[in-house]
Image (cartoon, rainbow, N blue to C red; front, side, top):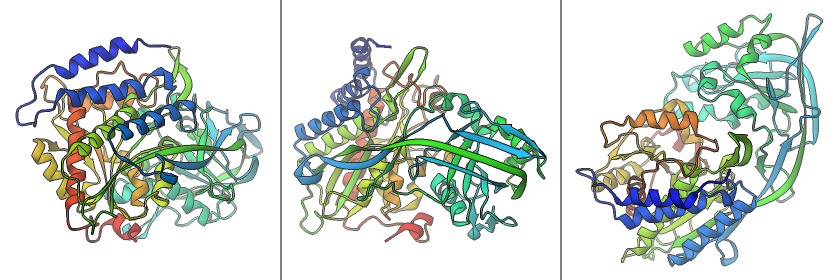
Length: 543
């Protein structure tokens, strides 16, 4: 459905120019808010069809960002002296014909329904696959001896299909909980123990926030993986012959006749008392996939540092440029525009770049501005850049901006990951300068530190921060936390994340200033950013 973008844009500009700055906050120039609004107007327009990685709409968005970098006088820092870094990938679609999940026990067979009950994973290693094997439930598939926790205790996975739940134990510190919640770590853990298949089971609490039916209707959307020089998928686990996701509503059938019922399993999940056990009978899992090569690109610009001793070191600003693309229609609209996710984050990146490019004195270290692709497909563009940066010098820090929910006047920001490194001092100083408050992550159970592009840099040992929008409204009549929760419930990854949302442009401009000031402080510090002593991520990934 086509929207009247110009009228919405005019209303947004008028809103950006009106009203006084909250007391204590540094004022925001109207042209800063206006520039952000203009960027979002273009990037979230229907013309770009949701900016899916590898699509024409994404390429238009990349061209727009590169043109803005050029207009700011930044240096191209991509491959071969240009603005872009090619990201080689494979794109895969699941095919319903041949997809199957069935359980046979006590001489009876139950067939689960495609989309209604289950969805097979896209297989990047084989076009067709099938396996029949016993089932074993392994809790949340977490092995963490440092917390005396082993979901695999007492069972054997070799030659079996592993069944496990999302997340990690709530008693874990947030950092460890985030790491062990990673889908990649769970798949690695069951594959290393000899599983031949895997079923990721939903739970009622998670599906209350993100309903199975709403997500499953977009089963036609492709998956992606990075592609190596030989054309093979990167970071897959071929020994897991078939994988699938299963709705929580199907758990009662799955656990029928097992040592614990579905109700008991979900109760133990809430209590943090899961235990592993074999399920009776055998399961048959099958999938068919269509996989082909595709390319997308990161957009990379550089503001050279002024200090000869530090200029070859780089502070990286990042924001993902892609979104979901075209999906299942909702109220007749099939364009998933991604206005907040992440046209707004990209616009804030562009504004931070403009603020820094306009400063008279260049920073001591060089600054990189990277609009990355395929975040929605698994942080792929950021992963490729962090592994194969297009600049010669080291990357010493990352500031990432992703989906700031700025739908009300805010006087705060949420620096996710602040507790891990020396970056804390820089963002705290920048916030104090602007009169802003730094709020704690209000939803640590969502483990977002591993779910956005900063984690690709963390995995390469680079200290990182995820700068997110705040939850404190300067209008006492607005409950900021409730507004954020409502966005996540109604608009996240939906066509309604569009230009009709009441984005508060001055607050977005203030977040851009916070990002710019933080990055400048990092760049000018004689000391490189460093992980805190004993930090979980620092010890696991530091190089």
